[in-house]
Length: 494
Image (tube, rainbow, N blue to C red; front, side, top):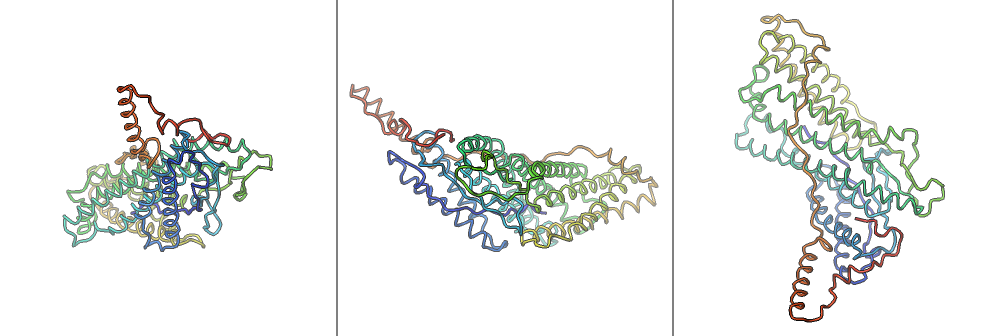
């Protein structure tokens, strides 16, 4: 049981000193530091691209992003407050890893505005956090089924699993922030540069529907791990005595079923959302335009890429919807068998037969992948196949037990599937989105140094006014004076 594994993007080099104008020379060192932090991130992403999946250092990437993002917010704050101006419209180059590409080769595109840089950086941050959570889970192994594990060791690994849940809830908050806040600003910026005749593509990575879909995916992955943690003690005891009756430590099967139903609902919503860009542009299969400058096509630069979301993401969501739907029916069957008495014997058998059928169909569908599947896709497919097989064996064990009881004690008829469908309850959430909070800028307005400098100047001003001296003009007032920006729409940034 694990979460989705994201392909991380790479980005082109850029020097902020070449596009930023610091007329007062207040932020020369800070701008250089921002360039260095971005270069470190670019190097970490390139190294990750070349490294085998099992050897990737996800924590290093997260730290590189933690270092760079405050500098990026510092630049945005200075631009917004006219303390730094721009020589020309900046253009940032990123690979769009959510796009469907030939031979699994993510296209590289160049898109103008600082809003683009912020969104791709935060997306990469969310991808990296999600991959780190997956690596944490992978390091635990199937600890809850190890017969020799001690109670203390199991609890320690439960805590690591809870940490992975927290990471995924944080990633969900990041996606939600990007979808609800950043993309609205990017749309305004896009309209501005398009009005200037520039081309500004919109890959799936910059679609609000896709990004909100990723938030729901991360939350569903977190819920899935929360279910695993809830069942860890009972899973250990069930390893010794599988099948009915359930161990006393087992949580309510009805509760587990509701948690799985909510998982299936979240994955289903995510799948519908990520399919939206491809559906809305299914007639357009043109490749990405990467030329910039004046748009001579007469289309006003409103370049929709015609790309769909990568098939492995859509396949993952479809499989998770089917898996958690089947698991919900399995646990509804177990609940009827354990707590329904003799009158629910047929219901127990009916739900378990239904679950077994769906798991068998999912196993058949998971056995084959694309001809050109890469290491990442094969890894996810093999893990899913193993999980489905494990759940199929467990479901069959319960089915054999409850069917025997129904055939010898209860003698209840098995309800048709339509009647069973009417008995399915609503889902239940066990986790919640962790809202993203912007970091304090590394420099400029809002930073610790900027606030300290303002406080010192205010104190000096009060002292000089008290002594009757003439008040000098503060450096901040000079830096905040008339803007030196020389290009159209210079005040449109954060």
